[in-house]
Amino acid sequence: VQLQASGGGLVQAGDSVTVSCAASGGTFSRFGMGWFRQAPGKERDFVAAISRSGGDTRYAEAVKGRFTISRDNARKTAYLQMRSLKPEDTATYYCAADVTAILTTGAQVTPRSYEYWGQGTLVTVSS
Image 1 (cartoon, rainbow, N blue to C red):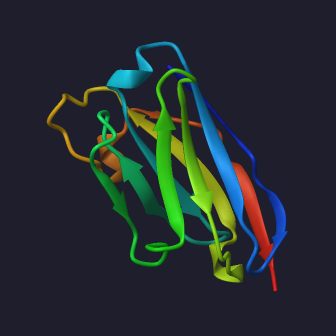
Image 2 (cartoon, one colour):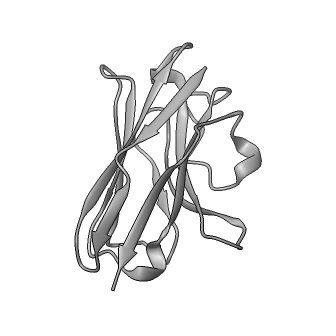
């Protein structure tokens, strides 16, 4: 399984941006997907996750109400729509795939639940 994240860039505070994660290999519709972020000098933190069915989503408190995770199984792609961006959202955003998820597995918030990771895409929010 390979994951390719894209869509990052430099934006202004208050702007919106959507980052994408395209998967190849495996059966995407069977993967739980997650987004994590890592700011310079900080640990990697959970941002959002979606179950393989799409029926369960989880968000970090810091992004709840501003970010939306979604998936398009036909395109084998997961998305993270980010609105009302703040300078503290500046980070490299990583997508991850939980390939062992079963139908009843909920959205996973811990990094160890994910077996595959993308290379990350940098989002910089200027004030």
